[in-house]
Length: 198
Ligand SMILES: [Ca+2]
Image 1 (cartoon, rainbow, N blue to C red):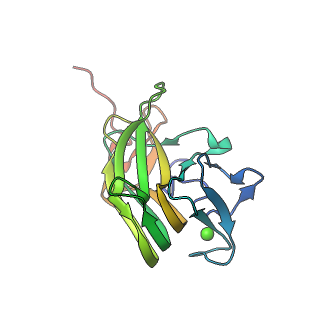
Image 2: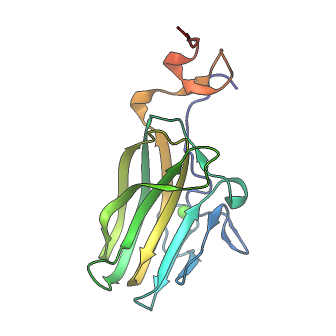
């Protein structure tokens, strides 16, 4: 597997695969209604649609990987780009503290059970009616090597759709390759560089 180039880290990123409990590798707790939409989608056959009639409803859709429980693995102190295509219809927030639609990213270090907030994007959330738009931001993983994405639709009425999620290692960091030192996945310019302890 040497020379592997980094690719999308999100499993089922376009909400194409669904099981009895929702989209494969996504978790759907909350009081809103999250469903598969086969008519309004950005690409493929399906999108994730969240609809609220109750302005107090909140929905948080959590990313996972195999089985929906494992976090997304990333490299520490590295830039990544996260994006989703998002569409909104008549989203009305309850008040100025309401989130509406936004992407919430959390991180933690392997072995820790506590997730910490990294980014809310956009901070003020999306509302109103808008056609498919790409919501994208770059973040640095810092000391975290595990990530969890939460698609939020909180304290608002209306409908939001998500499709085509993508989490990529930032291009400037170069592709990941297998280290000749210990077999881990590292940036290509560090692949053959042994760790020196002085
Ligand atoms: Ca799709």
